[in-house]
Image 1 (cartoon, rainbow, N blue to C red):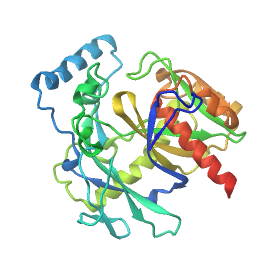
Image 2 (cartoon, helix red, strand yellow):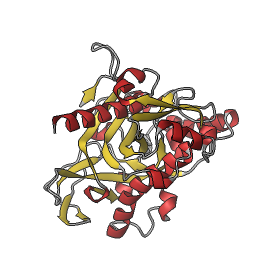
Image 3 (tube, rainbow, N blue to C red):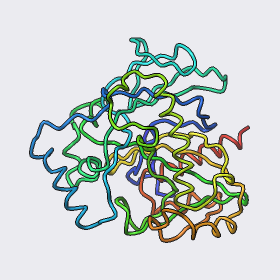
Image 4 (cartoon, one colour):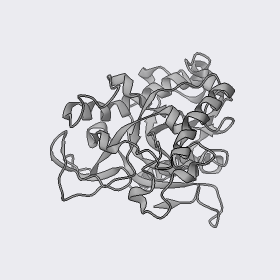
Length: 324
């Protein structure tokens, strides 16, 4: 479903789409992965357009030496993915269930709602810059196709973002520095990407239909978001709770997908600020802010659309708790 960005007028153009939402939050055991080369990006048939990927990357490197290429997980938005949960942590392809936009609902064995399976392939940051972030990014879309095929030529790395709520009920927001590749100077939630290299994935070789690896990738989504919070804010892991997956947002501009997690922090905002100066990746931001959670909806105007979607997912979660 498409939602208008929080804080914008009802008749404003939407800045994000909510691909899937879990207001109650999903634990790691409820999130599954189908990893394979069938979920990779397909090159665009226009060779001139495809050739611009390298040109754009070289130009961006010359203008920003902080950028570097690395592999990323790609969220599938191009093909129908047929999946069925036949036992805990075991995913096999069947012909009776369809997945759209890179995810599929599965019956939960925990009785708390649906599980979800993400269809993931591999891409890299260079291809992301040359497709999604290209000045010609819309040329990579299939305009006459439905959503299943529309994004098949896009890199679509699965970003992650964390709604970190402090002990004094504030939400942490960073202001991005000029050293980053996306939206410098804008406000964002802590986050980045889960990293294939963290679990030893360098290519698809030897990994097709590997059930154990699928579980490791799903777990990396959760360990990866904690790693991003620690690196960007300096908060020690011991003060962070277990992440809950609350949904997927896609920015309309550049078709940028991001998975959002809710994470409770046992520190107050003042205590968090003391750790920020020690953050390993502090160069990626210029300031850390804490926003009272009741004021978050009015503070998203300077956020990229995908992060406005994250704020919307948090609002859904908050409303769900209020009704309980």
